[in-house]
Length: 321
Image (cartoon, rainbow, N blue to C red):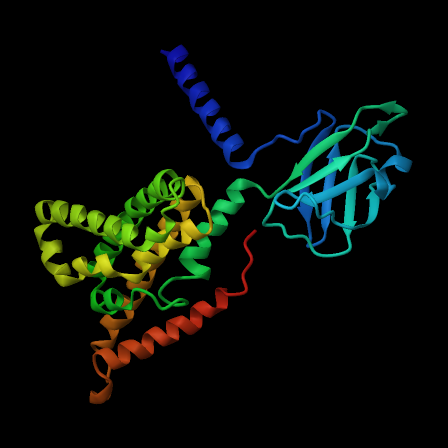
């Protein structure tokens, strides 16, 4: 029994390591190079497995850097500085780097303690897990579709009167977004794009969202009739919800892969649920507040939504990764 438990723990550990390698990556392109990374806005740091010669490391002519999509445009290196341990090399560039793109760093033959270790071609890019978290938190908070893009307002105002309905609607909407987003990605990558039918994106994506909503509608009608009745017409309105159409269009326009599309759809859905929950909490309290008759109902809801939008503007300058 102990042996089986140990085997299971080993299998879980290996699985976690494989996922970590997939998300972050550890390939540098040369056995003597341990790590490459961006630093600040205009620096690239290269960490070697051992000390390198100072004369080789500080000669900028030994290095060539370009963005992976633009191999013909070489970036100007202002200075190459070697750390006191002689294993950390910092390349300073004359202009800020576009760290959203992978950079290719080529070196002449690396010299370490008088030995020629051969040339290296290194890839410098951000950790993939960080990119995924940037897409997720960007869709959920920084660029919240309701409070910063003002999309999906019909369903937002219609189902944010009670917390129970808001949470249920948020879960349903997130489920629809994830299924519709992943189907839209697959259809775009394997059908629309290869056969040059991208001009049909909007028509096809509306159909996919409608199919997803119809599936959720049928399941919810059988599983939870009370929640289905509480949603009323607003569940059907998800078909024409601007967010439900915007997410597939965004993932197609940005050429996201499957993981990135999943993070975008999940972030958009959870961001919408957060907006619904916050609004429902306030509107329940407003029912007991002394509000002028002319502001009761939808007018005070619009005022409250505007205040939330102002609050979410505080995330606009946030840079995650």
